[in-house]
Image (tube, rainbow over all chains, first blue to last red):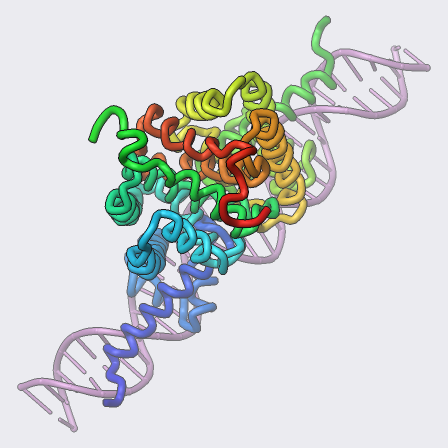
Length: 198
Length: 198
DNA sequence: ATTCGACTTGGGCGAACGTCCAGACGGTAG
DNA sequence: CTACCGTCTGGACGTTCGCCCAAGTCGAAT
């Protein structure tokens, strides 16, 4: 049961990933350096290029893992919603712990931006966002909300937009936000069938 | 009428500001360097620190000017809306030229992020966002939409969230977006106070 | 004509950057 | 015991970083 050399190696690799995620949030994507990374993780600088091909590759892997982790925790929780209003309430309350200056919020925003400059990252992150959108859309469709795909897309975008604005200006209270957002999901299939496609 | 030395100086200063805005979008806030800035603007490196105290100071001023410019063009256009649906339509169509990878979208996102690491920038940018929100809220209030402040805040956040998601995943068509968003503004003053208290 | 001041140049400062590599360490296999 | 392999160290490489400054240019003011 004693940790083997390879086990230690894996642990160091994982520690580098965690450190990278923290530093992206703290300093910004393009300001994460090999040396700070290594020092924070408690290893020599060379280790970074032993485990990862380059710093950008490390950042990419770290960010995707972190984003995937958050979405995987969020998704199942939303699937429990029995009504559209409940879905909105879950979304709003799930956002409450993040104030826009926390590591998670910043990592998301940094990753979105980095994706516009890194095609590989853009593709992978796009899949994550798409699957989260689909999860939302399926739930909305089951709850008979009109235009579930478009509604899900806008809801997901609003979530990230709120996290972007939150550090700048005090936003609406969770109650107010839920009230307003519930209007967004009050279109039911009878009142207005989605125009265009289906 | 001939340009004086001081005129040229002002012009160089302005060119540095424009170049900075472009480079923030292109490389990311923390990756804009003195030398690239100077070369792109066609001047020697020393000029940057002659006109501005430091690179961060230049970035701050450039970003704020650019954001102010965009909001000043957007605001008056929205004030022309005669109905809530029309307001949404103006918002959606005003967003159409930006695909999330254009300089303007990227500059906004970069500036929001930089503001979380620069208190002076945060304060100034917060004022700009606040005044845009108030403009939206006033319009919504005049159109008898319930909870105008909260609605304006979420609408503004959604705009930025959409720009953040757009490069990753093809979003809803403008028509679909307008349809869904118009549900967001369909609460009128009589029907309100359905659930959450004000 | 001379002085002045705003503007610009080009190079130099120490520090930090990403990447690479020769060699040390330590457990496992033959 | 020897040979090996995955892991890690510490330092070196050339480049770029932000910032600074002595010197030069040139129109405006005297």
